[in-house]
Image 1 (cartoon, rainbow, N blue to C red):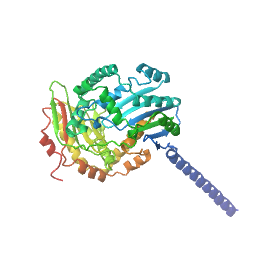
Image 2 (image 1 turned 90 degrees about the vertical axis):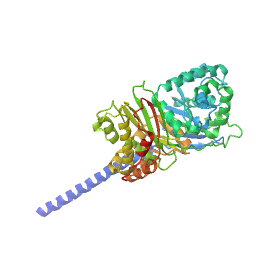
Image 3 (image 1 turned 60 degrees about the vertical axis):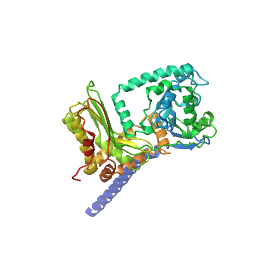
Image 4 (image 1 turned 120 degrees about the vertical axis):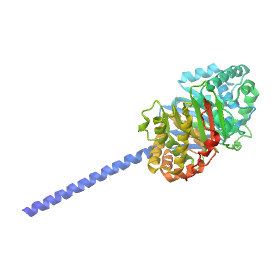
Length: 475
């Protein structure tokens, strides 16, 4: 009897064990499916190059809203000293009426759709885009194509917009961060097109006329230099058909590729001393890399390691970034931020800070100490934290159709394709502390920096002293 009970118990335990194994396997299978599902469900970025030379790239996730835009490979870098500012001027004029629509008609059409129309100009790109309902994408593309190709450029509109741009320049001049970075570009890339400001000098804005704008439009707004991007509720085939219908190709411009003159980096400095200002604004940078350089992501991790901080944040003692702790605990600055500004073939990597005039020297010392630490002794734990932060910040920025559309347009102009988020994440996660040390040693260690400072900057160390702190004799 006892043996039968024993056998029965063993059989029962065996069945329970099998049941537990089966349940565990199902649970594991469910976990695997859940882990893979987001990857499998990420909509692909589809690209088609039309006969005209225009590239059409979309990411369609079937939402009720969409963002569509035209990204043009043209900006202040393609200007010279005589027409510097014409790219930004052209962006303003695009909204002032076309051959088919007056300015008021354009505004009414956009408002009737409940859409938004925007544009911006950078040193290498000019962008026109619209946020709208998915059902209005065809109308939005037709309007965008019209303002890009058929801007009226009337004399009265030019004169009116000239005043608007001059007022905008006054606003920019009151933003000392913008002023510092313009100065930084001017001395880092002196004698090259990247030294140009985006808005241009006042004397140029006062002279630009319809002929200058028309020449710029003809020479730079060619289909071969355009990417039409869409995200959200955008059907790729339909968008291709719309672009073929509304964006024509001027004869001779099908295969036009923009020619870039090399931009030489020069280690140098500029100081604009103004003791009437309450705080000093200072930027220090070395030459970074272009968008396609294999060291780009490693320098982005290094920039994340430097971080950012301002006095509105919590106590610096709890900050994981070494420079933030030093800045906060020593009351060395009001704020600072690292930056990694990239262009096609070069870039600026460094730190911008706002400080009391008596603390400039100490703040600069701590920044350069951190530069040297990145080159020599940065730890694996710090790099892992920076990689997680960089990955999170990168992916969290892609949470709207507008940000995804901007990402698509920019990447197609810079890379010729869009890097999928999972590939980007994998490449970031593959970076090690040794990679960071090697790349920082290559671009930072014993390099001549560019320094721009505005305000009460008397206590900013002499350039030769700053240069001598770009290396350690003990290494």
